[in-house]
Length: 335
Length: 249
View 1 (cartoon, each protein chain N blue to C red):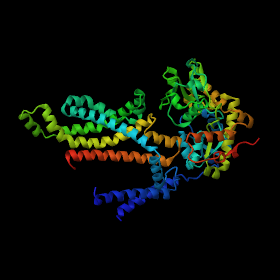
View 2: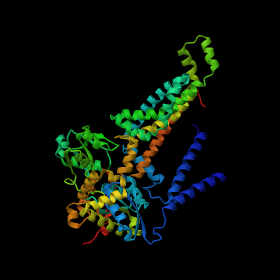
View 3: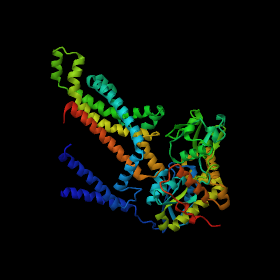
View 4: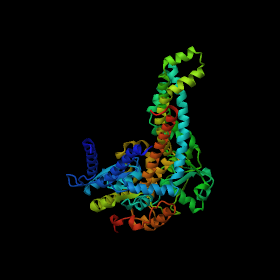
């Protein structure tokens, strides 16, 4: 074989090995704290106030953690966490089910959004009051995939409708909120703590359709890779505990969360009233009957079971999975 | 292609697949990060036999063919104008270069909004990405036509149309088709980007679905293989046309 070819091939192999080795860095810092990389949603937001508070107030540090917050999109985050490139993240429960069914080794550790945040909203003037009223209406959505698409199908199915009974209008740039404002669509998918709040702040009466009344889809929560759970069990437990502590404190005193968010992302301070409204709506979504009974972070196993069945019907589950393969509640506080 | 020519191509494919397999073994990447070639092959066959891939491939092919036809057609006309009019070149060139330099990924969501009916926006994106290489190739081709031949044509009182059809186009054809070779592969890129900017069907949309909703990495790779095969097939189709029109080069 040509020696130059052999050398080139060896160089490629060396690069591959070096890249692989980069992911195997030390996890303890000189101070003895455990490094933990944490992936949040794509855009820094007041919705992540518990993480900002726990980070800036030193809760993580005092618990022996050195936390690095990163912003990632959901599919990328799930894969990176499964790979072990990121330790913990905030990801949608409805992403965890298909991901685990595809052998991505992750577990859902604690619920952050006990109420499913993805909703359908419309102006009251549209005449839409419930899912049945969506028939024949123009509905804006970023795409026929992801949590909003799952939620919309669940809502429609609850009144024996299908996506064919409505007119789907795609807004891949997430401009569906503006489309409701201008009347380009009758209703749109969005997040309970975002578009409807913004519309109400503009003085518009808004109707919001929640999917929780139909099927208790698991909302975004803390997830980690199984290998990370095994190798950093104490650190993961401390992270979950301190995050839930920050959530409880913000629920009791929202301004504490708002201040922490503005300190972490100063741009948020330019629209303080809007950010406060978003945070209050977010806090509301941390709660459900299950969390009021079992505490913040509690996992609704029945909801997960229902959701597995629903996502299986939608063809999103490659092979059967059980709740125990999806959730790992060991890090939740025991009352 | 005879056996002697096919052998190196087959060997290159074997080396590529072998290297891919080796990387999956050496790197230790789990299949959801980098699936081994056999997993992708199985998913590829499943996706085609179960009817998953075909409608998406057909949708993308339609966008590519129409987008390429529109983009290349306009590009040949504009390229001719640029070659024959210095004023047109001075006026239009900055805009053409600026359009080419602007990332299509940034423009695609805007174009999708301007043409919300679906197919039109995708055709515009494909046409836009195809336009520049074909226009430049046409301009270069037309300018390289032998001035002596043109002079001879004029001295024989050939009309503009006769000079255009019998001298300029045949002489510039190798260059134009060279631009089209590049353009047709870019048309595939344009179609995929346009589907990422909003679609309900197409191979680009299937990539998003496989990655974002299904977490089905082998399906994503199988779709990428299909996209690559589509690009290669269209490229060789242009080469075939080129050989029929101007012979092997």
